Image (cartoon, rainbow, N blue to C red; front, side, top):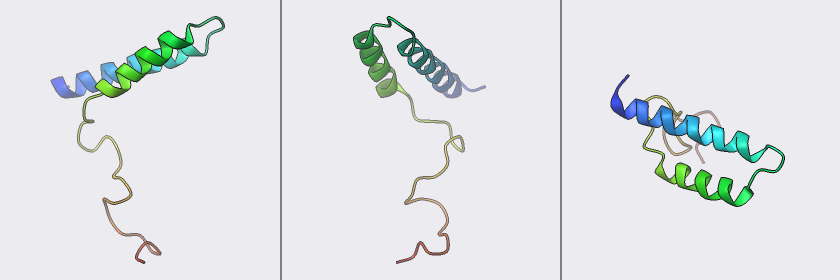
Length: 66
């Protein structure tokens, strides 16, 4: 796995852990909001091909051309 892929994977796992923590009874919501926001902001660009293309990218589908 490339270094870029490892960083992306590690950050997504930590973000998932914060989400699970935030759902626990008695969780510090301010902490979860700050750490979750920081992790989401620091999320590196996903490796090519991992995320499907956005609405303005990729092939045109029937009914899309206005």
